[in-house]
Image 1 (cartoon, rainbow, N blue to C red):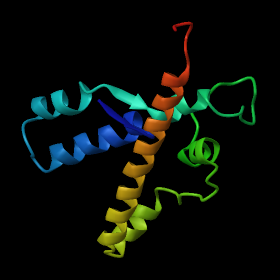
Image 2 (image 1 turned 30 degrees about the vertical axis):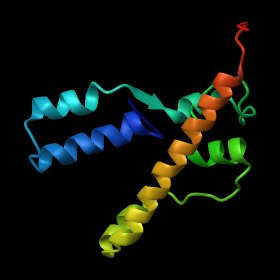
Image 3 (image 1 turned 90 degrees about the vertical axis):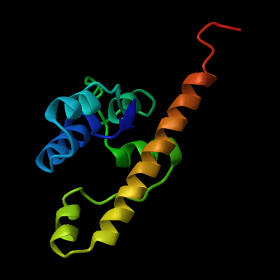
Length: 126
């Protein structure tokens, strides 16, 4: 299983294409590896546990910033993902590594918090 924000529409497809481009292994193995994983999209699940968004008539995925603010009270904003391209062009690979590490740690925190919230619900069981 893999969990994250935008993992299904961005993360996994990018990893697949990059792995394919670099010839890591044959395409069939890459497909089996990346697309047969169980994807757990945190931006969708998080929409269920916070206050309603701007449009109360629509239930829609939420951003990582929205989730972190509403689950943890953390008001810091993660910069747009497009900054990674600027870091890459500047050759600032350590900053890309740090940003990626922070993203993984945030996804893990959110996943564990959501799991705890789910487990704290009784669902009618004693």
